[in-house]
Length: 525
Image (cartoon, rainbow, N blue to C red; front, side, top):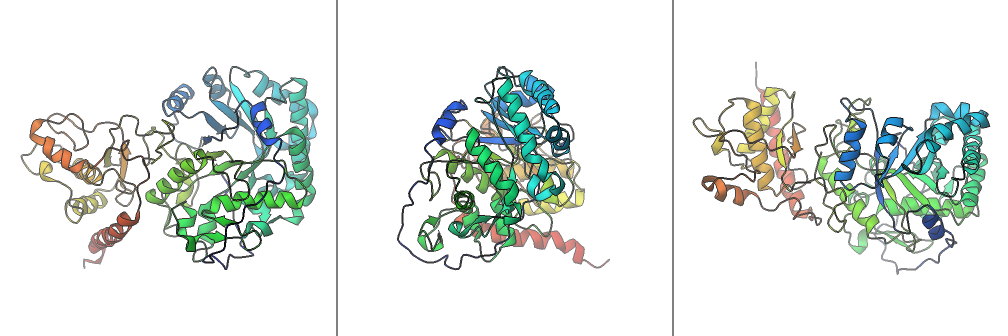
């Protein structure tokens, strides 16, 4: 995933204008729903996930597929055409976007025979047992691999010809994912246009997409828009949080009101296409997400923000409300990404975009009421917060002291002589205290972080006579305590929880925790 940079050459200076709502007329989507039907996806938008492989101890292909089925994930995008995984996906009804890596564009774009061989090896060999729905050719080629730009369309056309020869061109679409930065002046959307230095590549590509009924694939990250325009783009707008009319972004040319950044980015792409007289190509968001952890320069990469963004994104897409410009068409979205890719290079956020850790435990619990069982990553309605492996005892001790002190966790069971005193280790005691606080907070977003030393797990950490607060195996002796801490199960609280009261309280807790964290550093030697 390339960190797509968004340059705001034109800034919304009218964020607080209360303008009357004006409905824009559709600009030419007569074929879109027919295209969706032809792809076998119907006309309903979906939310899928990207699966990256820069993961230590990645699950086996069969285990990944079982996990996808458990989570009711029906659409995935791969960054290559991994044969073992494609084989494991056979007969599952999971639709797959496979990819041509950037380093293969030269060979495929230079030879029809190579393109035909690629399709034969990676598509024909698996389809229709494995439901390959699209081929993503390259990734952000126009903005990251300038030497390959002249090869992009030839590669796409050669692959398409191979699909035609295999009589699969009506079943499998072909396109190329682009960074948001191919669109200049994205705010307000009505003023957006494609980077003119790329027009010689973009216009023929759009004409191909229009002719073949394929989508414009875009990697859109409100996170980067916010980070590069703090003070101009409000955080709430980036996170899909409910807004007062005064905070809605108003396009002065169309008077369309935008309640979130992603819709504005999608409409900026539509306006850019309209400027080139292309009005029948739908935007497919091939990447979007929010990191759950960052370094000192990424203070908004937090579990709470990641949970809020992805939970609201899922609900926004499945509500099928479209965008202000095109309320009749809702773009499908692939969340970046399924697993944290711990092998990725810095910054820290690059390794922390996943919804799950590599062992399939959730990084946080999505609040996705109304989406059925999709991504119901609290699969057992029993989740726990425990200390992560490999953490420094001193760091764990600071977090433990905070949980049992200012955090008001019930730590009575880890006192000498009590059931959870053994094993008498900082990690063991911290895990109990973390889980007590997590359950007390109703498993709310951000309540299992403790400065990055805690994690959510679905494995019951109870042992022997030590029963953790989140366990269902509650003795009569402890039932009253556990019931008082379990404000609500994650599945019962899936409907989005407003963060206003949590934010106010969280600021005070954050300050207290940081004071505790740095006191040891301030103590004279």
